[in-house]
Image (tube, rainbow, N blue to C red; front, side):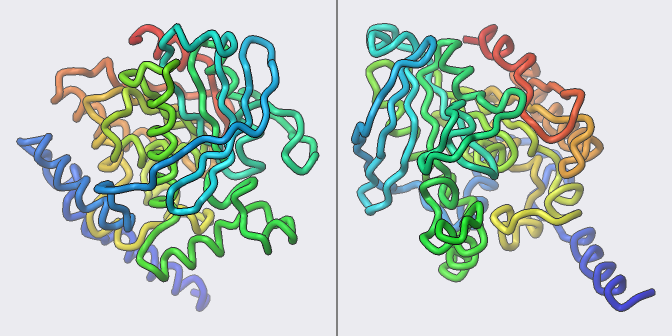
Length: 344
């Protein structure tokens, strides 16, 4: 055995032997709601996140234009702690939708160029062409289906990159952001959940939005934020996770992933399916790719088996949905919109 292989084997054993002391895999709780409350409290602690108070937010409209079937506004969300969140707000049918009370969608991008991808915008804020793959524009798809849709830059991406990373065209500020946050007892996932909750505050305040029908949806790193936000924020009516839900052991801890994915000590207490189980009995739709190499299907199957038991115990198995797309790591819109529409 080579020296590096011996080190890898040692670390892999640490991962395999992690206690998961609060996990469904140890014992299925007789009191599911009580278990959820305990796990949620621990998760907030691990993320370095408090929901007792969060920044207030005010919107500044920077521009708007008519798109095919909706009005697209470019806005700044000014947080009371000084952070500015650039975002697109898509209003189906134009501003007249104020009288319609539409469901609200928070569409969260993954690693890449940021909000412009999910909004289907052809050029980013620096004038660069935005390459779009199949179904990348799921935020715009939501607007076309009647959702008032908010699409922010996640912290560390797009316009929310640190100056050095912008100058060096680094693609993201995940590394600098994560290291500095970890040093202060916080996590990047926690900060992205905080951003999502602030965005939901704004979205639910709009007169066009039915605040009882809030949806969060995201691919890859957007799926991460969607899953953790769905677990923490009970206002969400539905959570759609694409290209992320799996097990930590089969994905995040089995191969190279961005440093923004990691939460210190989480494997002492819970697996990814335990986080997802906090969403129950609310709607959860899981999208995967059968050829996705970084969130492999056997791990998805294992996670879904635990979640199916949870939703059965709550008596709402139809509130958990799944679609496996035929390709790799990408968004698949083939079934999700009809699934949500059937439950609106």
